[in-house]
Length: 101
Image 1 (cartoon, rainbow, N blue to C red):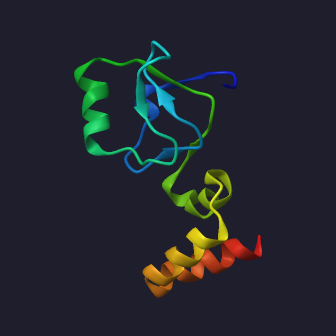
Image 2: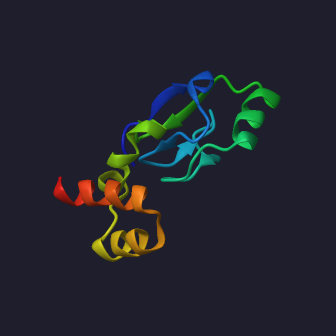
């Protein structure tokens, strides 16, 4: 496991995701799995338990940076093809841009 970085819990935003698992302050209990998005119940837990910071060896990916997710999450071409077939034309054009990177 890489070097753990502290993230202010108040910086966690809805739909944000991370390139590695995110842990609570103890560094043992997982807050968010790699590649999973922050949901309302995650934000509620931060407030309820007065969580000050989270730990991760990865980095935050803003929802608007979704085009970088494919590279960070290590998607393979099969997953990309499946996503392209299953998604709307707008999402498919995003995936085509990814393949050009």
